[in-house]
Image (spheres, rainbow, N blue to C red):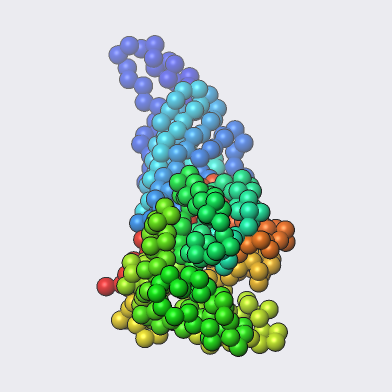
Length: 439
């Protein structure tokens, strides 16, 4: 390098002689990787670790903005990605170089960068990065009761402060507005809490139904009390299977819920989870008929073993009707006759399995295990969903909070926003954009 600098100095003293430093344009063929470690005289930034492959919902992270600082007499730095042709960075003087290189055409997996200075055939540095499809992490809540409990609502804000990327899909029960035990003042407080989080943080207000009789009455249909998942009869309606209402009854309940939501400023819900996950194919048809785009009643039933000691109707029904759903089940469009089958013809709704279930039934370590099953590494070859949640209630415990906090701490380690992995926090209403109806 010193010899080239001296030659150019001599050349510059002869006015009519052009100086050719001998570097030439970037070569097509990559250089040989460095035999040992990277040359410590060069500092590289901008490679990062992970870059998303985009889709209709999530923009791709399709370029690298590179910066290289090297010795002051460096004249040129070229970079190669995998077996692609060399690209020259822009010189900024005093050994500083930068440039943006496109990676949008690269598929999932590990990719290599090689850096060479001044036309050298051996690279001074090698770096790697990954391209991956997203893993959508959905944090959901099931409002089983009319009063969610202020402590549980406050826990949401504590979780958001600790994990600022998260968004909640709030499966809200319309019975907050039909239970005579909830005062009008408290209803307004809950409404304000929900709408402020929706408007400030883009949380989703979705629908959850346990067919409490005081809500069913607003739909103008009889309250069913003899198809409970727990008892012989349940005159409150709370534990009655949603499937008991069939398609026509479910449509009436959805009309009532939509009306209540709109009247209280929550907007029309477009996604749903059945109480006790007890949706039938008729439930799904009713949802589709009433403008719902996604359901997440498909249950990873084996994780609910607490309800199998001794066996209960809740466990047995879910085991029988969601028999194929497990830790790694992914979104699909259900068949018109079989809610577990993705075969055509389809109910026009996206089914997103509740594969990590609710923290009532799984520990943080169990949820981390399900996370690992859905992202075994290193890169996802297609988009995936991790769905988990909890129940806001006056009985929401510190242990439940710690379980939610624990899995979010784990997920945060792999956030795409930090180029640390594939995790993208999402709400359910967005997912049909990634999994549109099959023609």
